[in-house]
Length: 95
Image (tube, rainbow, N blue to C red):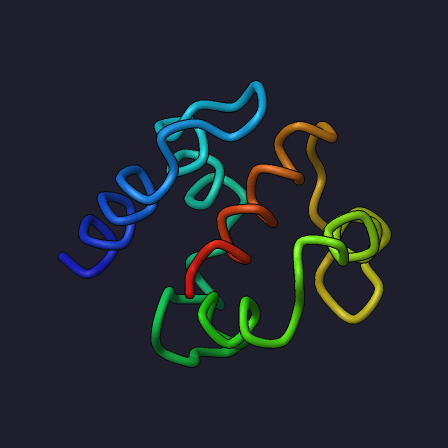
């Protein structure tokens, strides 16, 4: 139930991000296993998306995407630039 709620919130929070639709962002969060370690409001294994948005600005997006892609301080996440940017933009939009 919590996973469904998080996916619905993710879908509603982003009507569109670049070339990746909100439905795609929700699917990305699930397929890339983001929701195993992160939640929107609650700290899990990793920080919540709200914690991340309080810590980083959108200007940090390229550096965060690089860390995800390279596995620096975070498990390595594979995906296109559009996919990774959509995930990071979603996380940083959770105020």
